Image 1 (cartoon, rainbow, N blue to C red):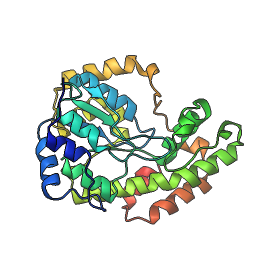
Image 2 (spheres, rainbow, N blue to C red):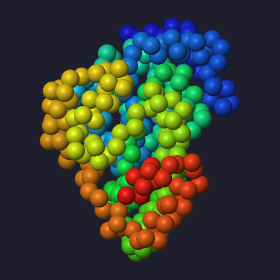
Image 3 (tube, rainbow, N blue to C red):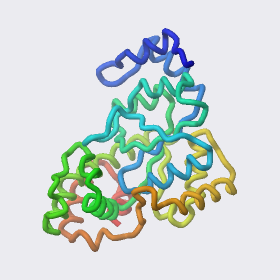
Length: 281
């Protein structure tokens, strides 16, 4: 039976500094145990192929999927330390941990990532295309309407006029997506060895290569033949998940007015023109 030591118990019940920094013996302990086991962290925005890639990663490394946040329920992810400590101490079994979190690279999350030497992976995809997929999910899945991103989704969303749905997604969820990419672009620029940026177009052309890059970045490198087999296996089971069809539908769902609104949201951040173009494609 798993029996945590006193340091593990103390760390699980400790709090970081107000800004999220893990300091002193607490921080030293976390950095020490984090070296013992790898983690694959897909820090994707919703509807960016995260469910597909995490499933393929699990198939490739015989991993285990774990929710590493206290709860979702209407907010973006903030990592839950006791779960990580339990994993490092062996309480969750021997399989490598794979997680998929809709997490921004805000200061507290960066401190957490650095304390445990995590290597997040981010997918860059057109925001209008992601919001089009999100729209479909909200129309068809009542459970999805309970899990907003720092917002609440009205129960009557499916009955709203099409124009109102478009305005809601751009006005309410658009700011989250803009901030999400702004924080990750900034973090990747600051620490390019820690954050892996994948591109959706490249992923669609060569999904096994994207998986191979993600696993290598996470310290769990696998050869091309294993990654291809994992992609093929996951593709066969895609109906089991909220599978993202990967279609470019943003311009069919949103008007130029909505694209202009997203462009203005992105303009508040120091995002290069090339990045903005990719996010608005």
